[in-house]
Image 1 (tube, one colour):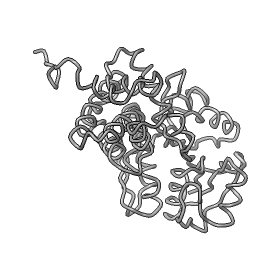
Image 2 (cartoon, rainbow, N blue to C red):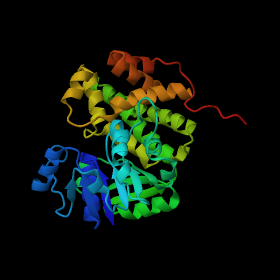
Image 3 (tube, rainbow, N blue to C red):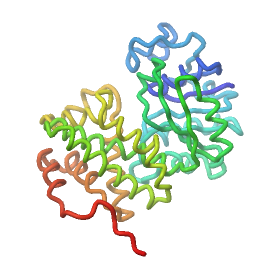
Image 4 (cartoon, helix red, strand yellow):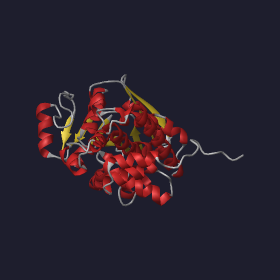
Length: 336
């Protein structure tokens, strides 16, 4: 099958290599002509996946038209703030009947749209049956090195099964669901919770505090996702709890690293300037904070991370105010 992967960051490159290794004809669209030339010459994405040898059959282009020509499946692996512009640029060239798979974790600022909602807004509602989401606990560097990984693809049932077969390999296990909202909210909000967990670690508050933040963070994710129509069980799966645990506990997590450095007293502007790759949680925090207010969903961890990132609140005060909140039952009382 011919597949186009849009975005040559770490995740896009890792997925392009995975799909090439499983026998598909893959073209990777690269925004930078300099990086595109380097990929062709060295078969290595040194800025994003140093030390990983890419398949010789993988091809590269900077042309949107060339990238998607004849593609049955188009995988979008761009930052959330770039999704609208990229979708707009590719719209004239999309082959009719192709499937679009978003692997981007974020909520668009301003509109507060999920990535599939952005795609529908740009491409039209007629594309809805062709849209899918791939998400779960997965680091690009590990997937690129062939380490075992499991993810979820969310789409209409027949589309999900088709994509499950496309992506599956002996070391990349793919599950299916039809709950696109739950998968996308889980993938977006976990980055914000990971910043909070990183702050706690940076302050030296220990594993118990981190576990509490993960657990209560999941409760916030579930509240928001279900208010938006998601199924609660989705958030107990790979794209919810699985991705949340990974992002909050690993030294490969950029969002967790941002939190650690904030907890150690560094300034956000300095951290972002020094990071080569995007920490989606920094932008997503503003969107999730606004979305929670719009939908009147209680999300105290998200509110405190927002205060830390955008209101200048000290990290010690952020954690202290979370601990000093009014005590309450862990689970809401169910009415008979």
